[in-house]
Amino acid sequence: GPVSFIKVYTERLLGTPHVPPSPDVYSKDTIISPNVSARLFLPKLSHHAQKLPVLVYYHGGGFCLESAFSSQYHRYMNILSAKAGALVVSVEYRLAPEHHLPAAYHDSWHALKWVCSHVHDKTHFKKDQWIANHADFNRVFIGGDSAGGNITHNMAMHAGSEYLPGNVKISGAILSYPHFWGSKPIGKEPADMKQHIAYKLSLFAYPSAPGGIDNPSFNPLADGAPSLSGLGCSRL
Image (cartoon, rainbow, N blue to C red; front, side, top):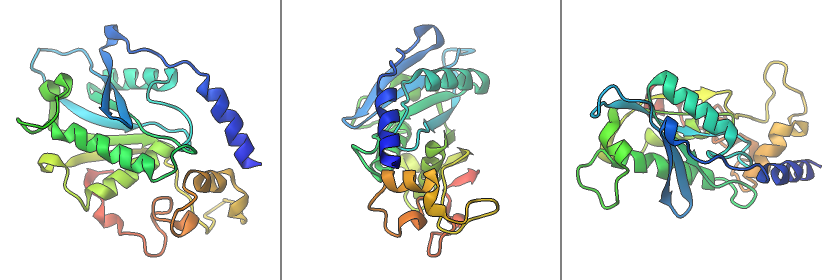
């Protein structure tokens, strides 16, 4: 069944070695809280006081696989940081089935708030010096792929209803093939949506979701879902 399928791939991917940060490309790891950590990527600077746009990135993996520290996402963020000239914060959030949704949403929001908290001169925590010295808080972006794209959407909606520290505004959200689903098929989607792996994976990750697959976390166009006019970002 689908649970066994997911279990096999989870166990296989758990054996994938994490890649250490690469000092020659300016990457390092940081602990944000007991449940949340991140890998930071800093491109080469033109001068020591240069300010850079910030991208808070959420990895994909169906809410139950992958890692900010995996070889795939390490390479991807390395290239992205260099090409975009951006300070990237790649977030390591908790995964299902050990931690069902909304745990990943809570972790992701906590990480975003942590980044934005660096805008204050005085804070109650030890600042990360890369963020404190080089982040341009007028150019903060969030992004992610697959499940990470879903998380990005939910973070943008959250930012539309709750202020970030220092009233930092999200300049843009990048959703790369985001994980959305619903009970009504669209276009060439199968008539029996319950047989699709995306349906089963969604409820595997969030079995207690109010409304099931039509929970606004998965289906932003569901009846009763918050209006997309409430997105807390300038560009999508």
